Image 1: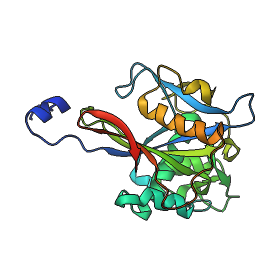
Image 2 (image 1 turned 180 degrees about the horizontal axis):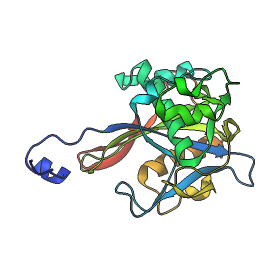
Image 3 (image 1 turned 135 degrees about the horizontal axis):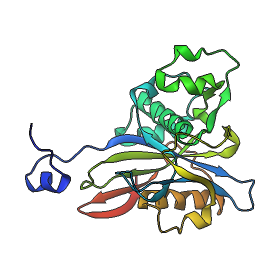
Image 4 (image 1 turned 60 degrees about the horizontal axis):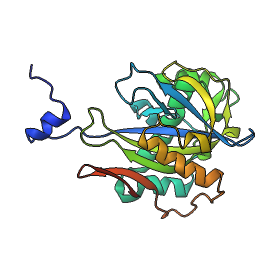
Amino acid sequence: MSKKLDPSQRRAKGAPLPKPIDAATILIVRRDMKKPSVLMGHRSAAHKFMPNTFVFPGGRLDPDDHTPPTAGELAEATMHRLMRKRRASKRKARALALAAIRETFEETGLIVGREHGGAIDPASVAPDWQDFFAAGYAPAVDALDYIYRAVTPPDNFRRFDARFFFVDAVHAFGDIGGSGELVDLQWIPIDEASVMDNCPSPTRGALAVAKRLVLDQAPLPQAAEAPVPALITRYGVEAEEFD
């Protein structure tokens, strides 16, 4: 068996670098607190990817995220922004929103959805979604807005192409708990979270967008052609551009 090369060794040997894995995350924002706040959790030192950081719930896109029924569909403008520059098909765009909702449920216990009233048998959906539907809800993808994208730098051992969604906490139900992958889950005021030292740069970038939307009351982009801020590394330099 050949030895697995880390990214720097692959670059030195001219081998292809790891392709980013599609991922999705959600900024859940509460406006009914003393200060508008966002739900964040701590990744422990044991994590290989972004250890000892505060992040939003989220994770990689799974095959099971392509099939679940939903309560509503993605807004047309949101769908088109996800599809810009052929970065996603309609099917993949929908699945990314579903991945963000599923990962949020698994990591925090919160359900971004609407009650299905028993109309959907949990046994009829993909295994990764059965607990979600058993709770009595269908995922409310129409409540999500796509606000940010970040691609892990080429030299990282693990690479992700992460889409950041935004949702008001009025669309999230249940008690905070989850799988334990994120610990110390808490509602952190957006203005405080945006200056925390232990936030990775993609998280800080998404928080800057949330700050404009919530604290500065900037309107969410409604036009399908509206560009989305994206954090990309080119020639070793990390910079924000518009996707």
